[in-house]
Image (cartoon, rainbow, N blue to C red; front, top):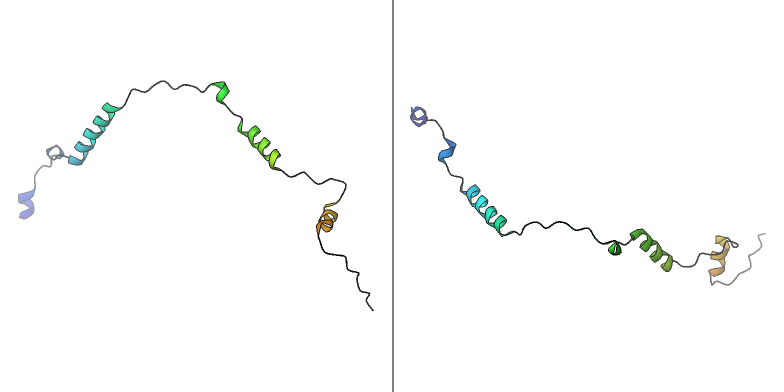
Amino acid sequence: MILNSKREHFDPGYLEDRYRSVLVEKLRAKQAKLPLKAATSTPAAQNVVNLMETLKASLAASKPPAPSKTRSRAKALHETKASPKVPRRKRS
């Protein structure tokens, strides 16, 4: 009985979506304040920097000199140690 008395045709246009109305109003106000889009300009050739060349130059400047190829790495490490040479004991 209650359901039959409440049954009617639903018209969504009857309801006002206040959230959407306020949102559309604010967006239109914001759009009116925006300046016209200017044509995008390409950067001048003098402003372009090759980043790879700059990085390589920076790395080359900060690298320590490479060890010479005549000495092996093991010998170079052994010579840099500050410990005095101690003779080995003979095993009996």
